[in-house]
Image (cartoon, rainbow, N blue to C red; front, side, top):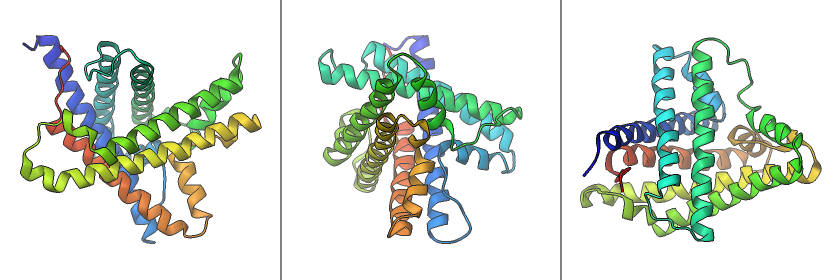
Length: 265
């Protein structure tokens, strides 16, 4: 039996999945337009939110997304603490639950950034958040190893997402009609695999930053796209990842509708 608080958390979780989906659709869509040479530009999640600010009702949309991202962060905390998906207390399960807490922190920060844009205090460059994080960590005791640990967590998340996509592990958490599964599952699997690739690449940036003791080497999706742009077949790489991020955004929207969300379990 679902309690009143559990029902509220479930609503926030679904809003969160939808908000995450919209962010990835924006990032992937902007990158796809850039790959097609239609005047767009590649960017990360913060840059996508900045672009949304220029849309009609942009402030209201950003506030709605921020609320959804806070709800998503709350749900990630519930998943990690209450182990709603039965990851367990073994090394693998604890690693996954730790990554859920990290996800809660990153989406909270993204929500704060979205709110800051609506009240005109979001002066930080959208591409500088990873470098800022790496720089702050480097100033702490054992900072170099902390930056490397962030990279290692990203590696783990990347492998986890890729495996989740390849093996369709998400199936156990979905209540989705068979007719929808026929077209939705291939999109979900592709989106998860590409997001895993993105995690592996951004994790590499953090490991390089730790090795060279240079926080400017750290980076996120925006820096990943910049690296692709200066490489052979860069346009094709950007286009491939853009499609994958759109697919992952679609997967998140499907989670908002069909995922089992059981905060009281």
